[in-house]
Image 1 (cartoon, rainbow, N blue to C red):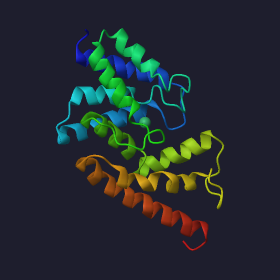
Image 2: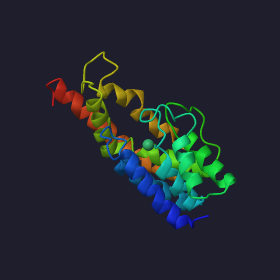
Image 3: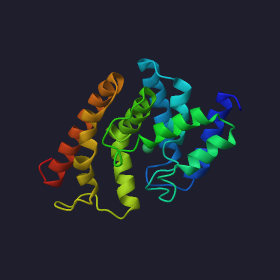
Length: 201
Ligand code: NI
């Protein structure tokens, strides 16, 4: 097997290639932020840091919005791990973590501490100032209006469908603490947006 630091470096390059052409908010910068945040949470929570970083780097390469054909099999991530000569058990664990991260597909929390760290990091990146930027970038890329009262496709509706729910869905104590601040910012932003929209701001 290639040593773990080299695998992490290779995983970064692998993700970079896959996300090179994406402008929907699922770009390489998202993956790198999730990796850094997951590492920070993992250190606090006493999780296996290299495993967390690897899963974070690969968590979106088979995302169902980006790669519907491989979303269920996670075959891009699996092929990468195999190409690194990683042992089957560790590769399985990484794939399991990745499979448990997605917001829309999973209602149950991941069953590993490492999965909890990566999922919290991914969710934190959907909150706060960055979460807001990503929501409008995604909406724009999919032709959705910024705001249209009553239209649940609009970007503002996404705050209610997902972003404002995340604070109560964090897994780790570290994630919960970080989510509080980001949630406060989301709510302040939304309030200001609506007051400007309604000519009250
Ligand atoms: Ni993600």
